[in-house]
Amino acid sequence: MMKYIIWMIFMLYSLPTVAQFDPITISLYTTVPNVKVSDEKESIATEDIALVRNVQEPNIQVFLPSKRNATGQAVVICPGGGYAVLAYDWEGTDIAKWFNSHGIAAIVLKYRLPSLASQEAPHEAPLMDAQRAMRMVRQHAKEWNIDPQQIGVMGFSAGGHLASTLGTHYDAGDGNAEDPIEQISSRPDFMILGYPVISLKKHVAHIGSRNNLLGKSPSDDLVDKFSNELHVTEDTPPTFIFHSQDDTGVPVQHSLLFYDALLDAKVPVEMHLYPTGGHGYSLGINAEGTHKGWPETCINWMRGLTR
Image 1 (tube, one colour):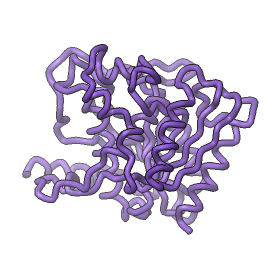
Image 2 (image 1 turned 90 degrees about the vertical axis):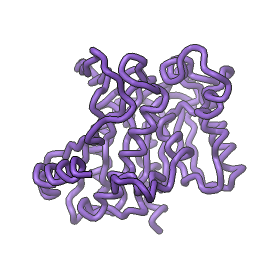
Image 3 (image 1 turned 120 degrees about the horizontal axis):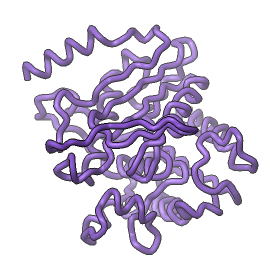
Image 4 (image 1 turned 45 degrees about the vertical axis):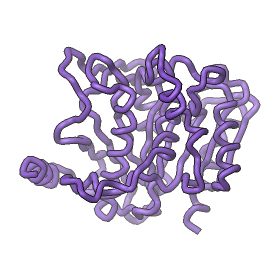
């Protein structure tokens, strides 16, 4: 407990104030759980997209709008990359800055990618980090001008799988935990899923994401656990989905499966399917076709959540 208190004091004195312009970067843990000693090192390749590999110290990077523009909404963003890399700017920081332009706080999650070399249970690491991020944002809600009941999660591709896993595998927090952060609910208040991986069932799975998360020979129980269309309930958060019908990377059937499950559970859902667009178009700024309009429809949907 003393170690946690010392860490919190350090964080309080080292954090920039919310009035500053630079994003705030905060480690998720004092001691990262679910790890084993390895020689793995994090790396970043910066070409046309910044690709992060072998994340060892997961963190959140917090982008805040001005107080005057703040709507009170916030989104935890999970970049995609097939659970092999993180497309950190393309589906992370670029998205965060766009949210800020609409008065929405945005938190980019640098989550651990499954690794047999550096983790005891690789398939659990991404979700652990996503749950921790949601708790931390809720803990800092007042400080960051955020409504603690308007914190959503967003993910692209495999990041969409992680976001939908958080939205279907959340918990209410552990009231007996020593760490106050772990006492906070990890449930997102809404989900935004961009061309998401949803199911890990063999007939529809994005095999790369499935292999990277679960290994090449997972048990049926593990496949079912992370096939998120099977875990939708009436308490699953309201959801916004967008996907292209000509997506050969992650077939549109993933979104259709999740949409049907949400309908069956009577969970509010808005889905936009575009004839073209392929896979992986971020904000669609340089795209041609109707899919480039998804940001505007998403913002309109988010505004409706606060009415």
